[in-house]
Length: 346
Ligand code: NAP
Image 1 (tube, rainbow, N blue to C red):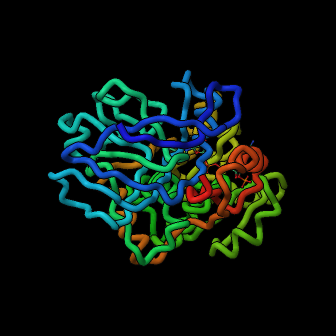
Image 2 (cartoon, rainbow, N blue to C red):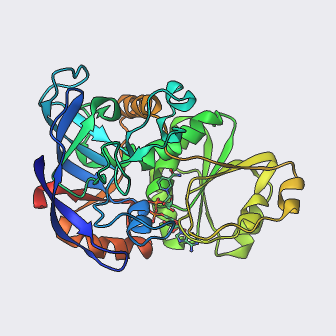
């Protein structure tokens, strides 16, 4: 086993604190990655707090990983030492079910192995990127262009693909009015992709202070949802809403902002279920859809698209000792727009 160090939560009530652990030796198809940067996703906080289901503790979060390949197994084809590699939300899947066969490893019917808070096929828990090293099968490592600023790449591996994938699936583009609900880590990536795909992009936010940021990101319009008159002014107008909100909110209100045949795409995962009136759907033939991260092939496509269009996340770099304070700021909405941990500070 290879010694590793990181920051872990020992239980759902504890802060993250330094913790030593081990990762597996490099197998024939594995790459060993020295982690350079890791994004702080709201999912990390949901998971260490058991917001959705009981977790596996100690838990080392982090699934927005970029680092340098330092060792490769003898059958590895995609990587050489010195390359940059990314790791997103998953590190293994069965590889032979219908979903895996179609490049949807995140939907593996045998059970996707997540990057942390998951049991690997070796029966050992997985540990994430708030740490110095990860060993992963090369299939689950993504190739990262060295033309991109590495500090802004980690968030592409989750916030990026989670917004890119449904916008592509619904072919959002020119002639469409796209609303991005919740201008956080996912939301700001949805704005960037929506614009890159040619849509007219409106930010729907409950934080009026983010108005200028939204315009600087390139959004065409900004609606302060805490102002009833502003909310009323966009009723029945959007073809798509991509919902990136992490906390409880009223879906019926937002369905009212969709045009006929509009689609509300849920990517945010509040811990409480939605209450949904059938009338909110019937009036205007509306749909609610969901989307979870994306497959490996599509994630590579997204990274290549970002390299071509020079798209990265807007980040605030932090020392790992400040990660608990960063969680608190994230809950307050005080992040522009992704905290990224510099693992050199570990
Ligand atoms: P984040 O950076 O904290 O952004 C969440 C945004 O939601 C905030 O910036 C805020 O936007 C809005 N918001 C927060 N509380 C709200 C409330 N009470 N009412 C209305 N709006 C509120 O979080 P994130 O990292 O982008 O993640 C967002 C959600 O997506 C989380 O639930 C996360 O677990 C989930 N997620 C899902 C997937 C997937 O595969 N589907 C992948 C990654 C993350 P405004 O200030 O603009 O209002």
